[in-house]
Amino acid sequence: MAVVVYGVLNRRGYGRALALGGATPVGAAFVVGAVAVPTFYAVAVGAVAGVVLRLLQRSRQASAGPGRPVTGSRLLVLFVVGAVLTTLVAPLLFNGLPVLRPEGEGAALAAGVVTKSNLAQIAYLLLSVAVVAFLARSRWAGPELVGTATCLATLLSLWSWAHINAGLPFPEGVFDNSPAFAFIETLPGGAPRVRGIFSEPAGLAGSCLVTIAYCASRFGQVRGPRKLGVFLVGAAALFLGSISTSTTFLIAGIALVAVAALVATSSFVLRGGSLQRSAVSALCAAALASLFLLPYLAAVIGEQVGEKVGSSSYVDRSSSDSTSLRLLLDTYGIGTGLGANRGSSFFATLLSTVGIVGTVLFIAVVVVLVRGAWSVPHARPAAWALIALVIGRAVSGPELSDSTGVLWLSLGVLAHAASRVERRNTPRTGTAVGTPSPAR
Image 1: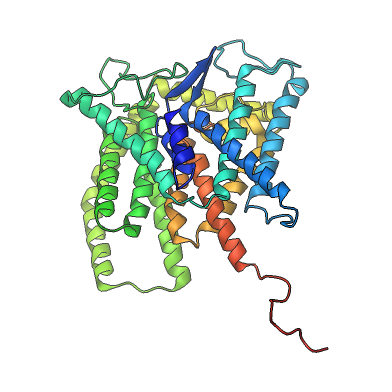
Image 2 (image 1 turned 60 degrees about the horizontal axis):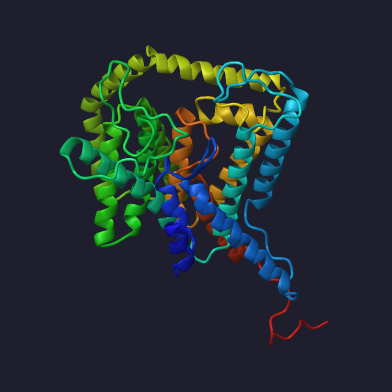
């Protein structure tokens, strides 16, 4: 309630409240029966109210006429409609089909039955889309919203780590109080693991990767104390990710570096840029250092991947992803519906729930918004946070409903920037006042 009130009274808009709500990804605002509502989605109800108020205000302005649609909004609406229809129709088409759900073994689709999980995921998706719609039309929708959500989660996790290892006072059970999560703090042999304020080390690793991507992109855009703050938060994220003992941080981090290198090389080649002497010297130094570091990194990566492949966790995750892909085939590419199945990775879950069409539409939304906003340098930290999140979820993290808020905050910020670019590049129609009409 305090965050909601802050968002309502804040002069820079309700987006700040949404960002604060996403900073506690495994926190529950309230619990209704067996449903624990994440903080981000509880605060997102205010975004729904904001969207409704805007629609009512516009309907009263008879002379306003239809406004220009937000970039990517049609694709996003098609995705939502398709996902909801699939959720309602799939049990009728594939009655009795076994799925993976929190209920455990024996869970299956049942004709005419909409489960609590189905309803919860539909509600979360609608709230998420409302956040995107609200930020796309907001006056203040900069990348700092994404930074607030992910950087504050990193700082709270660092505080938690300092409490465990240095005895620093910390409010245990305040930021990670949701009963909907199973908390993992030790290895199978009993050795301790670092999870911060997340439910498991993999969640901390994925969040740290997003923070690093955001801070690396944001670092050149800020000055003075803020630059130092961005550097320190990025360093804290690197430290926490490295001690999280999660293979997700290593694998997804390598993939993110590869994507960043590909983007930098493509931009350099397409623009025909030139390198300064300092840049050439840095590249030569990096090439020489790689001769000594690459064998060590290869050994470390091989050791961690080998341990992961031989673990029971890898077997369980691989089995759930294989089952999810089999469900895609069993439903002829239609999917089982939101909340009907839960794999181990994002795309396996997405394919098994919303099908091929839904997955293609979601990817199209991401590509359209990233591409549309890329020409706005100020918005690129949100784009890199989104890219890091998707890469991390592709390794470990199945939920479309993102309690960190980063997925939907990023899409909202990018939609805001892309829409401004589109409006700026679209020529105005009609004759300006005071301009003589062309002679006949």
